[in-house]
Length: 189
Image (tube, rainbow, N blue to C red; front, top):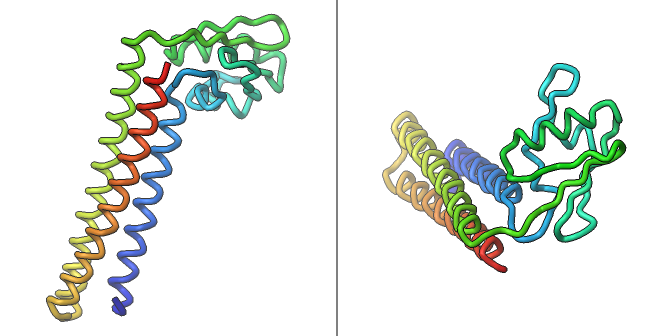
């Protein structure tokens, strides 16, 4: 495909679809699987001096054991705010504050909760697929407009649409693979 405006659109589609897949990967990392991982707390917001601040900007999180997270605040005055933020995140975790660090025990998942989390992962994957299809639709409309405005042949349009569909299929397959891997990780006892 040598038509520059059309190739630019295909490159843009590839970039947007890549961003969608990367976003899904970060979302899936926050869904809890069997063992404790610092990424579980990535979506926690802390009310820090009057503003909602991501936890990773006010503390470091580590997982020294498979069933425990340690949150070490950069500012000791933020301990109770961090503890409150973790509780309000509705992750099913009960942090305990010992005066210098916050210990977050991660209880084992029940079978029912595992199924629920796997369902959540699939829902997020479906949202990502919808986003991919929306990108495809927008780029396809733009390609059709370019072909019409520049009076290009229908073969150029069909070739570009074929390339666009191949990109879409590639990213949908990538999303399916990530989701199944995450679902297997969640269901593993």
